[in-house]
Length: 244
Image 1 (cartoon, one colour):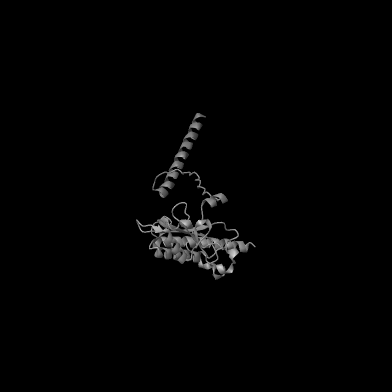
Image 2 (cartoon, one colour):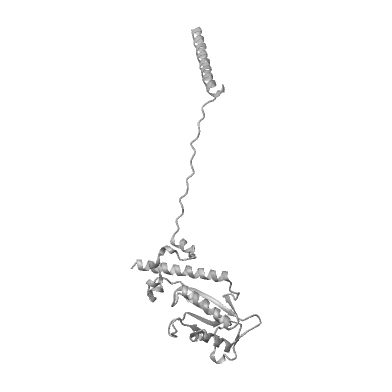
């Protein structure tokens, strides 16, 4: 009995050795003789790409207005200012405004005399009126909305007719509010023209709102702001007409 068990054990050992040899020979042909056990790889999780965040209305408002340097040509001529009446051109749903501001400054160490100011303003078409300052009316009617106005650069910014003879000041403040009685482009060109005329009459310098000499570059920047404002207002008017 013991001899039979010993024989069975020996047979099993031989079978195991033969299996190992066979596996070795098979792997040797495929892997250059190296016995390699199969490797198991873990499944890798691919990163999940987050969705783009959505902006709510408040976040969109925080982005601020979009600057548009020039009116896109693709709106076409049918959307020009001529298609709107004066009341419509002000914009039913458009509550923004843009202030054009320039200064006319006397040369360094010089001042303007009240009488000279009155004469120069009168010849340029300005009329003394509301708020004790001078106004320019596009159609010449003093009861209409002024195109632009002129104030004293010195506080409180007014002119007193009875004190013109004794008035002295280093400069004038020329400003216009958009939208106004004329198209924004016309207003910009007219105000610039009036400022240059006053500067020439008074032998002065046309400057920006900071009293720095008005350069061609700064003039171009102001013009771009006017164009951007004009486009936004026209877009508001167009949206209003489409919704009615």
